[in-house]
Image (cartoon, rainbow, N blue to C red; front, side, top):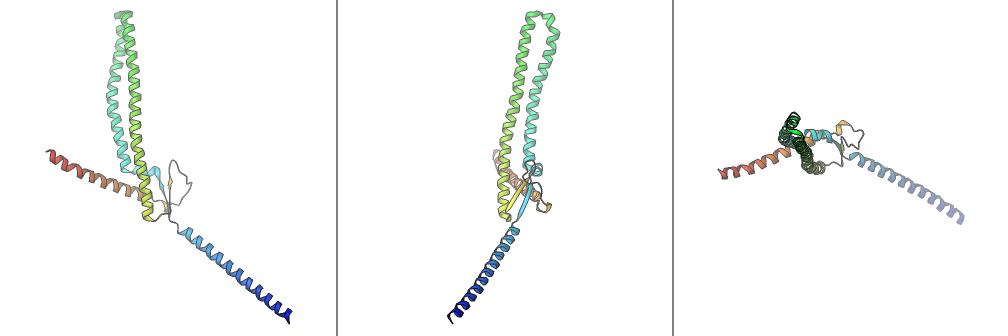
Length: 208
């Protein structure tokens, strides 16, 4: 009789083991399905950064600002360059009449002026580049912070960037939120500009 009890217990153990294995397998498949569902629930989007910078009002205003400065300061320098060209042209016609000593002295002066004008052109270009570069860096950092806050507010898991320095080679258009970001940024910039104007108006009235 003892062997029969042993065989019965052995059969029960095998059946129980199979049930346990089945339960484990079902549990693993449920977990896997849940993970797949979680991945599918991730809210993702991308922004075309090139388009963003073209259509962002603050970026366009910044570009217009430095273009105007470049033209204004360039006109002043251009006037000096034109005077130099006129003096150089007169020098050629006057050199023979005024003699070699005058020509050498006058020629050295013109060479010095030409060098100074060249340095002035380089200095102006560097100044505008540094100033505009610093402001553009500040603007870009502000845009990055805005997109980060926007992503958190709207519940995005990821917001990718495409454009000149893109890391995404393909994305469906339905995930493109570039226009949303541009509108939100422009609205924010517009409201901040109005707030600044409102602060300046009382000061102007006090002066009157």
